[in-house]
Image (cartoon, rainbow, N blue to C red):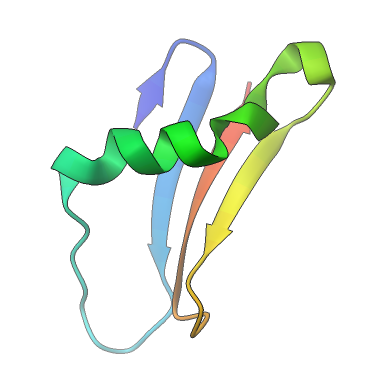
Length: 61
């Protein structure tokens, strides 16, 4: 998904399908978005599951 200059995505690295609740997506993006601010010269943020089976990422374009 994209909003303004930030692109967000969710990657499942497991062999079992999983779902992420879109209603909670904004909370996740808000958590990792400070790493996506151009004023901080950052290019993105990453949220990795503790078991490393999935991750969500925010990239600044």
